Every structure is written in structure tokens, then in C-alpha cells.
Length: 273
Image (cartoon, rainbow, N blue to C red; front, side, top):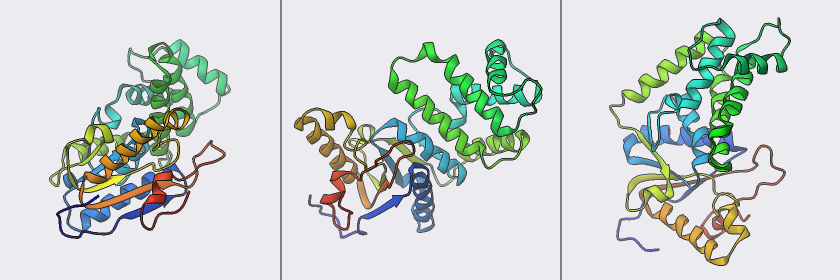
């Protein structure tokens, strides 16, 4: 791979202990790049899979960093709204017409004693279960269901630092304001496929693990599919005009073995998986 540009910064490879730590590394790296003089809209995070995005969105929100994603803003997604409204009902008794109260109350009674006072964390547990069960008939496939579950995991990450509902609702309003007002632009968050034909001064490519890039389906199928994954890696790398940062996780929560991508072994300074 040859470029006519002047020599830029060396490739940077970062490892997170798990997927949450990796997302936090990415959000902190974005802030570091902004402090170095890059506009946020000159930075792109290019993911192989949509399911990598929710935790990254959560980490960006936590760092008060505005971003553009291909879908709706995190807290404007219908599944996030449903979960928050259910939490409000559980903790205050206030409700909108959209809740199936019979289902929600049934889940609460299954998980907690009827008269037991519940915390913000417990309300999230009940509400997230409600959101998953309520939407079961809407899932077109397992990938859609997995993406919703991943967004709920990211919501849990954002709920955890807060002590009570008022504090959490205040956080949501502040997050919306931050993402709406962005004089320095917004970080671009998209899939590698969506980035074809685009260029950015700084590119962060997350999830360089076996099963993500290359995708698990390619590992289980043909050499041709593996070559397509290699081309996707090439696309991600060549979107970067000045800075390229690659990240991966040491372990994946809930999985016994997590291995760095075989593609990392081809890069200077990369760990051998």
C-alpha cells in the first residue's frame, strides 16, 4: 500500500481489557485527537459490525462528545425510550399510554417481591427485560435481536454511574443538548461499508478480533469470504489521511476465549494473535 502524501503519524494499536474498556479507550482517543487540533468531524470511527456501535456511543456520550451515526441518536431510539419510560413508571408511577402495564408489572413481580422498594439499577433490570420481551414479535432475525440487546447493555453502562432517576433523566437531557450543539462538528460513527469512497484525517477502526474482523461467518465459510474481510480491513485503513488507530479487546465478556485478529499480525508493531 503506497501513498503520495507526506509521511504521517505511525499506526497506533490500542488494546482494551474488554469491550467496555475498548469503547472507553476510543472515546478518550477522540478527545486526545481533538485536543491535538483535529475537528471532531475530521475523525471517523469505522466499525465492521453495527453491534460494535452501542457501547462506543455510550462511551462518547459519557465523555460529552457529539457524534453522527447512521441511525438515531442513542436516547432517541424507540427501544431506549421504551426502557426509560418503563423505568419512570416503576420508580414514580407516572406512565405513558404506550406501556403494557400488565406485562411490566408481571416482570417486576417475577424478579422482586411485590412490596419491595426498588433501586434505579433494579428498575433498569425490569425495564430492559420488558423491552426485550415486548419486542420479540418485531425481530426480523437474530442479528436485530442481538443489536437491541447490545443497546440495552450500553444503556446499563450509562445508568450505572447514577444514584437516582432524577439524576439519570438530567443526564439524558444534557446528552441530547451536547449532541445538538456541536460547533466543532461531530465524530463520524459508521460501518466500514458505509465509509467506502470517503476519507477522514483520523480513522479509528475498532474490534480487530477474530470473529469480528474477520467476521465469524467468513471464518466458517470459504477463503473467498476471508479475502473479502481482508479487503474491508484495507478499506478501513485507507480512509485515513493522517492518523490511523486500531483497537481490539483482550477478552469479550461472556466468551471463554477472545483472540486478536489475524490481520493485526501483518501490521508493524502489532501483537501476534
